Length: 488
Image 1 (spheres, rainbow, N blue to C red):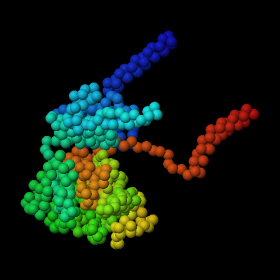
Image 2: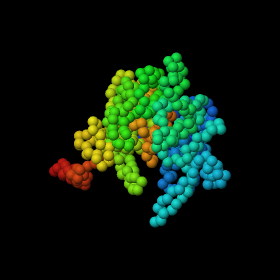
Image 3: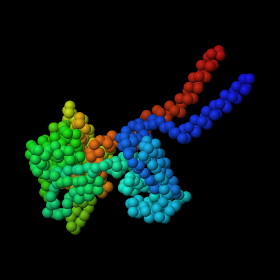
Image 4: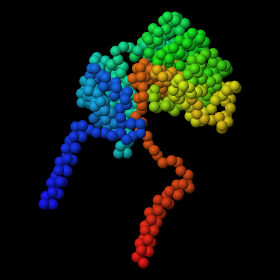
């Protein structure tokens, strides 16, 4: 009887396990124990895709013969796309192998998805393979393309922002204030790259605050989703500063690019910046200081002339990748460069939440009072002055308005763009987030935190090493001694 009961129990347990396996195959259960929920869609993404009224199709174009090292990335991307499909009933997924159909390969050229090349060492020789790995998000007759999926950390932001842009009913309006005129050295528009990028997604208008009458204030605030304010040496009147404050306090968003110090690039002379934008930013807790920041992490600058050229790092052109990644403003950005930037002082107040966005490395310092811009005349800093400095900050008010401050007006001008720098991408991400009325805010990078062993001194390493070698035999020895003493 007991034997029969045991067999019945084992058979019942086997059936339960099989049923659970089938159930979880149909309805997969995932529990995300990672810090900051790196494997879970953010609330912003879920809100956008659950509110879709019409179908959105995400097509993954990926070759079946991917290089071995790319396969783990493909698996991560596939799992992320499955999260989208499970979270939104109007999200459909399609996976296509372009190598199996030459017509599709031709279609991808029109969509802007290239054939990628990858070299790897196999069997003691280098082998080069060609493959496709891109995404197309489709809605009605419109498409958004991610040409190559190589940035998994920011892929959720890229997909969700593309879905948002495709499905929004109206085009956001962005105001550009304080444009600099073309110089005597170049008649080209110094903001051509930024304007070209913005105009692909937004209606961009150049604004003169003087032309906006008092009775037009409410219409002006209602019509514009975000403003970009540039320091072109303009002194704004109290009425103009007041208009910007009203815009921000109404829950709208502003990006400010302003100097703390004015630089004559011909003579390398420095004077106090001839703008009064601190009257706007300092009201809410951020002051751009009259100084210049320097760092050992710097862009290479050409210091040559017509007959001889040479490149060297210039400490006043700071290069940094120390960002606040809790925001979505740094998607697809490897680093940002600051030509002649000033430090920003932050002061807490009861009206705004102040968040440092971008800082220098801890091998940075500032010059103030006396300035030495010549690369051959830069004095060494005192050790106590070498530390991190804030170069970008975000101020959020109680109505949801956000004011982003960058302490360099040259940040988005074409002639100062470092090769590979993410200055324009930062501005586009900011405009994306600001013009979405908060729909894209709070979307984080999918970064998995690792906790390696801390750095140890040689003495500490010896203690751990010999402790691990001797501790186990010692415990057995103590146990043996105790057993012998009990026998006696």
